[in-house]
Image (cartoon, rainbow, N blue to C red):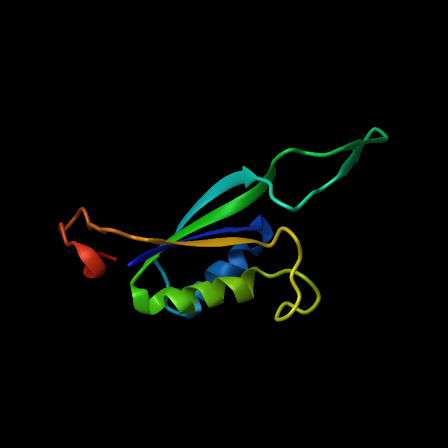
Length: 118
């Protein structure tokens, strides 16, 4: 079992969510977060450049069985890319995906454990 955590642009959330559902990946947690990496956005306010320190993003958390890791990651990558040609282009700030080992999963309602609980 793995936990896939993706940080993406807010504007890409609907597209990513739709593509995940199309691929039968329906269990997802979404959080609004802020952060910064290489992406820098500058705004002009009253003639002065203002560089915000934190940029709004969306964090997706998806617990999957090992067989669904590649499908989930590839779906997120294809749907979250920005640019003219989304299949090859991408822009700074499109996001990151982290994959971590999920030691245990427990469904509270039934007390099921392991892959069947996902």
